[in-house]
Amino acid sequence: MTLKLSLWRRLRPVLAVDAPLAAIVGLLVCTGLFTLYSASADFPGRFELQLRNVLMAMLLMCGAANVPQQFLMRHAATLYAIGVALLLAVFLLGVTKKGSTRWLHIGHDIQPSEMMKLAMPLMLAWFFHRYDNVKGWKLFVVAAVLLAIPVGLIAKQPDFGTAMLVLAAGFYVIVLAGLSWKALAALAVAGLAATPIVWHMLHDFQRQRVLTFLDPAADPLGKGFQINQAMTAIGSGGVTGRGWMDGPQGHLGFIPERSTDFIFSVFAEEFGLVGGIVLLVMYALLIVRGLQISAAAATLFSRLLGGAITMIFFTYAFINIGMVSGVVPVVGVPLPFFSYGGTALGTLGLGCGILMSIQRSYKCLK
Image 1 (cartoon, one colour):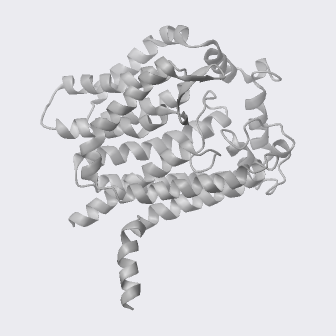
Image 2 (tube, rainbow, N blue to C red; image 1 turned 180 degrees about the vertical axis):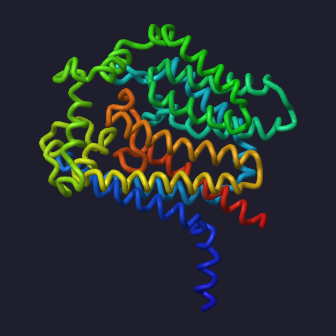
Image 3 (cartoon, rainbow, N blue to C red; image 1 turned 120 degrees about the horizontal axis):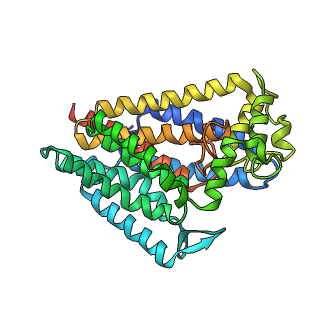
């Protein structure tokens, strides 16, 4: 009995995760693996590799859940500075693949932009917590500059999808910190006015994605092939779906990237409208639980950080499902806890772990 108690005392910190959040993530991961097994039937070994990715993500989640909020607050600015330095190194010494310079070779290729998805909200949450007693628009201007630096460097790579996610992560912190509705309206007007300028700054392939989004039928066998086939797969699923492993669009190879960015089309084809609704409910529960944890946080830093991370989950899901459904242009954004890949899954696992750390810190203060 004494040995059992001693073992439990050692394991309790590692197992001290938020049960509702862990259950929702577990359901999403299991459903994602179930779908990936079907979607990756023509890619031997991919399912096994994803099992390894899931294990690593869960370990990262448990590790982050045990990191005190004070530690994150103390090192937020350092992590941001390291991230910006690595992005500058990519700009100067980066590895180019398929026309994009996004990687640094340090023993093996790493993608520094991924760390900014968490370093950015960490930095801004610390910034607003540190200067909470300072009032006025100047604070938001400084925050905007801090956000613009990494977003600009990532967009230059070019990596529009990651730049958009980092921009969203920082923007959520700024909004939650108290940016007025008048300022938001002014930003919206300025954004619309700057559209022609942004259009000319885009690369040719990025402009082509927007044009394909506006009229996917213009080049059905070329640029519009991917989105047309994805929407065909979603429609062919009907109400209840074709059945697991029985989706013709996916298994006959009509859907490119069917195990990564377009995995939702495989899921919708096999499980139909009913399955799609169940999946949306899972994501809604994930977001609700994240917002509950954030609202109950003890400090401004934790509230801003938790709220931003939760809204990152929303952004991932909204953009991915939206692009597969033809609602938004196609960008490289994976479906959270579903798409094949280790880097994004690890980032999401860390995000969930930070939410659990916020919940744990709140419990310790009660």
